[in-house]
Image (cartoon, rainbow, N blue to C red; front, side, top):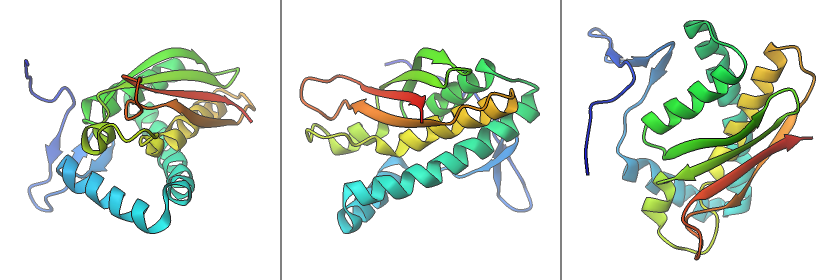
Length: 176
């Protein structure tokens, strides 16, 4: 295993303690803390209901993130989606690889290796990375709108590294 320092800028406000990366305030928490909270809520609500809630919240958050980051870095189109996948990977959620991306058509395929959720859940024979689905649709829709494309999308997970026989997760974005 090789290691390196974070590849993204992190600034800490000396007066408030607020961490910032690029244009947005951040939180830095241990993975087990976050995923254990996720698992506790899932246990109370059930994975289907919790996935619905996370989809909506994730969609909104990804839209906001892409809007702010595009403005901060002066980027647009595919570059915003690529930057988003890079930052998600750099922040420890897993390694996200864009396998296909067509913003005007509203389609994408994203591969996820080394998922933080799979590391915590293990092989449980179900998809555990559903938190990310709304992120992909929210990113796609924000970028498409910024380019003047009327497409609106939905994202779904088609496989998870937590399933027997699967070594990675896969997500697909398609038009509504």
